[in-house]
Structure formats: structure tokens, C-alpha cells
Image (cartoon, rainbow, N blue to C red):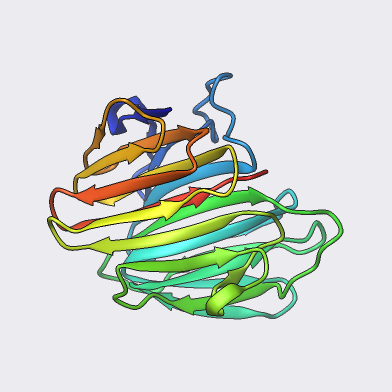
Length: 234
């Protein structure tokens, strides 16, 4: 089964300095039926105004993946670690209960736009506090995985995240390891078809789709496409 969740169905926020779209319950946006999906707890797209920042705070034990779409961000923790991330790069924060984290839009003129994912982390595994990766122009890039396969970011959970960058008309088929996955269009239009699905799901910019009990999904880019496929065995 593939079931779409349109961008119009998502929660939103506009605080002036921060604008956000929430796939699952987050902050003031609460839907008891959408508290996450398997180990994926948060999937937000947020825009920080020029010079804005998120001040130091602690988090539950999660892996936080920030994919920068526009601008330049800096992430710092209370242990003295920091990383600068520009558009086309991503950072992974392996949060600890005794460590606080902050985020800064380094530009005084340009907004910072990014996708942010939170994934439940295994309580027994420890990874570097901050990891950083450059996203090349590959049509399919393994962005994050449990063991850091092929130079990907290493998660503390059995999850695989693919970043897709397809020209119009290109098609790609990806295997799904577990019973669930989530497909998110960052920009562009998608036609998604599973092995068991009867109907093709059409997604437009900002839409997502819950994928359930499909051994693979075939993704066709109707327009130039950028998307994430989050494979969620757990």
C-alpha cells in the first residue's frame, strides 16, 4: 500500500523568524494519529530568517538529520563541537541527554531552508556527536545507514535514507528492507508504484507518502525531482 499525505494536510507555523511545515505532531501542532511513523519521529521543513538562531536545548535520545536546501547553517554543541553546513550538504547530530545543541543561520541577508528528521536512537550504541556529508549529483545517494555504508552518515538505528535527484522522465526502483517506508518530495512531481500496489500515487512538491508492505518502490520523476526515501524496518 502507498498512501499519500499532501502538503495541505501538514501542520504549519509562522513565527516571523521561523516558518515551518510539520509532517507529524511537533510543537503546537498535535494530531494523536500522527505522532511519527515507526522510528521516524519528526519530518519538518523549516525556514530560519537571516541571522536567526535556535538557542541551546537538549533533546530526547534521537538522531537529528539536517539537510540544508538553501543558505548556510552552523550547528554547535555544549561539548565544543561545531560544523558549518551549506546548501547541498547535511549534518547528523547524535544527541546525548547531557549535551545541548544550537543552530544558527550564518547569513544576515539570506534565509536558511532545511529539512529536519528525528529518528529514535538505539540506547546501546554511541556514534560521533556530529557527522557531516556532501551530497553529490548522483541520481540515488545513500545518505544515512546503520553502518555508514558507502560513506553515508551512520545512524543509531536500523534505518536507511536515500536522497534522490532525478531529471524529468527518469525512473528508479529501490528495494525496501522492512514493512514500512516514507517517501518525501522536496521539490518536483513523483509517480510512485509499489510491487503490490494497484494504483500509482502522484505526489507534488511537499507531498509525502506512507509505504506499507511493499518490497520495492518504483519512482518516476514527472518533473526535475529531489526527494527522500526513508526505509524503516524498525
